[in-house]
Image (cartoon, rainbow, N blue to C red; front, top):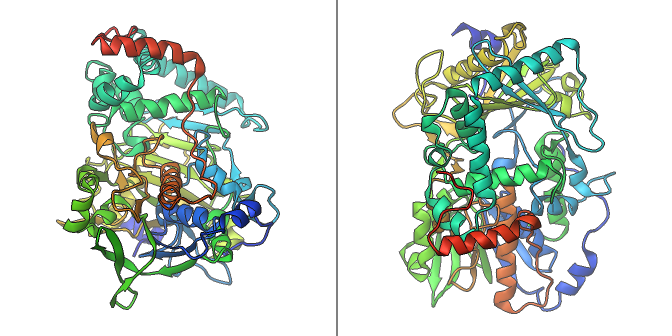
Length: 587
């Protein structure tokens, strides 16, 4: 079971369709010469659905094979047996959805998915939280940061909130020595002005922890500037994470905050459960384009014959194996599942597939707490900087204006859902002294709840009360907790040093096999829904190039590059070729 009642805990969406047809001229033109082409998309997550979308709009006949559920890690999940009295089940997810303004390709796809009443499709279901919070433990004030954006009304402030905000800033300022703050700013400037070659070669091989010299610095420096922006956000250890990946993300967010090259505000979330606001309307639209879906079908192998994929061996929901065939195949599964389907003959045909064995995954998994009262935390995401398990969270009900939570979900008593991501599964907690993997499911829930309270209830007010806890739901992809062999079927790609060079291209040396997924080399270089979407666009373009199609190519928008930095980057390239450090690098 993924959940439990409060007593046990403390004691031990309908598909939306309609709208106008999108990209009609493109689809009509693209069908010339493409209608007879068939494509098997192996995987139905964001990468697979994006590939199906782009192909179907260009007139290809597409079939998607998905082993579990459409949407992959981005989907919603129903809490089993939780809805009564005509209400829907309580909404659960792998984690919460975060779609920042640095994304461009995924938002473009969302604008092209019809949604009743929305001019810009499901994209209009994105809303911008007003603030974010870095929650501190040990009695230290939390750091509350407004997120201004045109049309975004600031969160209401009281005299007490102002007092707390000033206290938190001063507290962190006094605990973070000036020379450390200046040093971090210098390191960020070094990266901003580094040429592509220095980024791809030197900074890709250097851990973020080493780049920012975290071992020399104070606790606050390490927790906020090293661990807080690596482990808490992308589940990668600061001691191992590639500087190239981490700093590229920071650079993109910095420009986003400045309104430079952004698709929208820094922080965007959906205004309803993910399936309702996005995935179900997407599937409905794809079906209207003729896409077929086979759910519960697991890809086991690929058959190579005369240098091409001749078929994919799949296991149907009944356990029977069969071979499915198509003109082209797009492998759109997560890397840990995709590489199991690449047999020795397939790997021999393209050596880059074997390189994927060197890519690594880790655990970053969601747990939801259902509460009988709204939580007075804040209007946006919170990052629990000091939590041993690197927790991030958001209270969801306030962001779903179309739902009366008690009337629409559960048994009528649940008023809110606190959705939490657990990024660190190998460090001892504060309640049992065990790692998350060593805990049972119930112990994980109690431990996470204890860490939430330690961060939110420690500075003079009670934000979370045991009395309002109704139940919890832990992602069912996690199994075997508390045993010698815990497993997580839906892990997250992480980015240790050097792994960028092992990420494959979307095109393979097998002419009818293409790769799509957040592990494929894309401009954002991060395991994200944007990366999955971008890789699918690359795969479709490679397919079109391979057959000489006249269809319009998918747009692939890279991360923003500030033009005023290009000159100094060219200068840095000269210095790099001369084996000289960056001009601003003081060591």
